[in-house]
Image (cartoon, rainbow, N blue to C red; front, side):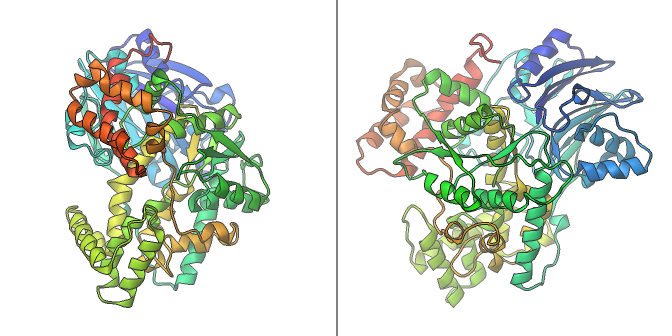
Amino acid sequence: MCGIFGCIGKIDYDKALQCTSKMRHRGPDSLNVRQLEGVTLGHTRLTIMDRDEAANQPMRDISERYCIVYNGEVYNFIEIRKELEIKGHKFRTQSDTEVLLYAYIEWGENFQDKCNGMWSLAIWDNYEKKLFLSRDRFGIKPLYLYWEDGNFYFASEMKAFFPVMKERLPNYSIFGVGDYFRFEATDECSIKGIKKLTAGTCAVWQNGYFAQKKWWNTLEHLQEISKPYEEQVEILQELFLDACKIRMRSDVPIGTALSGGIDSSCTLGAMHYLSEEYVERKTNDWQHAFVANMPDTCFDETKYAEMAAEHIGIQVDRVNINPQIGADELLRYLYLCEEPYITSPIPYIQTYRKISDAGIKVTLDGHGADELFAGYSFDLFSACMDAGTGTKEFTEVVNTYNETCMNGSWVTELEAFNQMVLHIRDNNTYKMQNDTFDRMSELNKRLYIETHDKYLPTLLRCYDRFSMASGVESRMPFMDYRIVCFAFSIPWTSKIRNGYTKAIIRDMARPFMRDEILNRKQKIGFNAPNTKWFKGELKEFLLDIIHSKDFKECNLINALDVYVDVNEFLQNNIDNYQDGERIWRKIVPYLWKKAVIDCDWMGAGYA
């Protein structure tokens, strides 16, 4: 995992070095800039596969025609390398970077279809003076674009452009909507003038022209699965174990950020299940689990995390989350995250920092399962339409919702019907113009939107920043493209079944995780306990904000509205976690502007 930077145009070496250095946290092991005719490429490296300096980037092929900078991991690189060796290609390193470079040379842009992993990359053709850019299927790894004074720039993070930007301004349209899940799947960003290459897209720059092409569409890769449920469970188990197996390939120790929920526990259980199986380049040093410890909050799952770890005979390290980090440190967290989000980054960044401090550079985490397999209770309202009103199945779906929902918002069948209508209306606002999508169940339509256009793109961006802020690579077995395609090929009844959400995940994981974990119905989720913090440890911090002069003058918020809301929140004796989330969302535009737009972090000693 790394940070990449590039410029087509005129940029001096020191400026390019400054831009690349902005992402040193992503790749603390080496930093290199190479200037070729027509292009400058920069790279910060986190060494995971092939720790030799020969695998550093920017990397050129043996003919020196092509040069690559690459961020990510392609887990099946060993199999691709064997294909290339048969075709006569010779390799000088043991890295996946060199495999990708020769895969592009051999197959052109079609090499993307062969890759199973996460990546953003750039390959420069020095003969044709052509730049090729690519981003993985689901946008797990970021790639930003910027144009200034005739120069074209690209980078893994927006802050890499700051040294060459004449001014930094917010993209006011993002903050005007106030929905931080709506823009991540688009090319829009929170900073004016910066764009992103969207997920599953590649692009070419040549002779001053920039052209993009969508190379991946999940809907084109679905299959008809008419097999009985029990066979579907077996198929998913085989896919999931193989996804974990190839993600355990590493030349450094790996671990997991364990929440105690089903998805991360399944991942840990699978790692243990596979530990005795030989896989080329798979590490045997994987027994490192970490859990965020937030005592006396509704989000603390330490008990369940320790239960999952005990099941496979390992210890779990508690990460004691400290919200009292000071205003400057919180701003630095937001600077590292770059984009605003619905909750505080404190528990996430502190967890991955502890993982990094323990010498772990790679984690296998459970992200993506909720969006693919219906882990959120509100998704059940879409399933109500599939069940059909007035049926036994409809009643079962409503009962599942009531048994699953954490915040106690029990609903009647009439209320569920009304929510169902709203969900169907929301589903219909997405005009896919695709027969495959139209034939999906309403639940799968809803999940497809959440996976590709709403929640998951934002979560993937956040976890890239949370983990890479400390130089940790987060790998996600559930985001294996084979599992994603499988998830949208099975019927809704394989996901909502016998009173459970994510039923097929629970059943496929029974050989390697205890039932007490898998049978949990309420989803807690990994969140910041903002209500408790704002009424306790961070109360003075919150009051200082709303009384400050620059807060009242911030043009991204309605300061008076926030002031009133905060005071009502503090006086309310009923502690609802959603109230704390609401307060965070109201103050985060101000904090974000202060951290990302106004601060000079070079002057403060930060890259």
